[in-house]
Image (cartoon, rainbow, N blue to C red):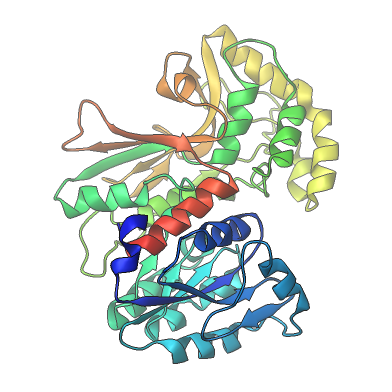
Length: 396
């Protein structure tokens, strides 16, 4: 990776278009504009959900003024316009980069076209790895055809070096056997705060509310597919075998059975063996985040019982998952579930996590007895933008 100190030595220039200027996008722009002159980076386009600004030679903006520039623009966002204009900028000695900070399926669907015409794509957007396998294959094929890079470190664990670590393990000839961990910063925060090994503590609804205020939840508190996307993305990286296209086919992700915190079992009780979440089916159909938060206190007693039952056995609740590379399945421990499970209070998932930390353990042939562990903040605009910026610097 290039350091800030040697950016001025590069002979390339980088025309950068940023789509999505919310929390992560704003922080990324702040980090980008903070590079001292002379910088090889030229911010040529900004796009929000309402407006777009574009100038092929670079926008004359700073961290204090780019929002005003975007607000004054009369141009509506147009992905096809952006595609045409960025592709026209591609030429020798000039790299063009699309930075997608959205969670949009529409933007992700265009990655193959951007890549095909030589536009590099950097993104924390998870959608390209959690939709149809054909899109993933088109992305890899387009990148191979043009040589444009597709970098996605921030799709897993915000700024943590998870994807790059996995690629390095495989590239150096190691064989990944299993990947396990707490992949969601959102769910990590919620269960770290809620279940500490004690029988009592803050209510589940209050913890979720605080997580939402901190900007962690998005929809993950009621949508277990957030975990599926995270685990699917890890499996979609080159974990199983080397590939000339730089990745491997995501295997058997449809075998994953999911249980949200709103899941319900007919028996209405917590199974001792599976430790699934037994809550109200009414929460499953709620689309509004505000309504979900309002209704959640109705079920605090059930969550309290889960916590107390686990604590009586010296255990905590954690939302963890396992990728078994050898069998090509995604599961939690020995079962085909990703949901809150019980872990001893001495387990790393209980002792090493704090806040919105992610923790990922790579079990490989080289790291057999003691797995390789990557741990750190797994949510938050600053660290996610750092992961995006780290990918940008890899192009220099």
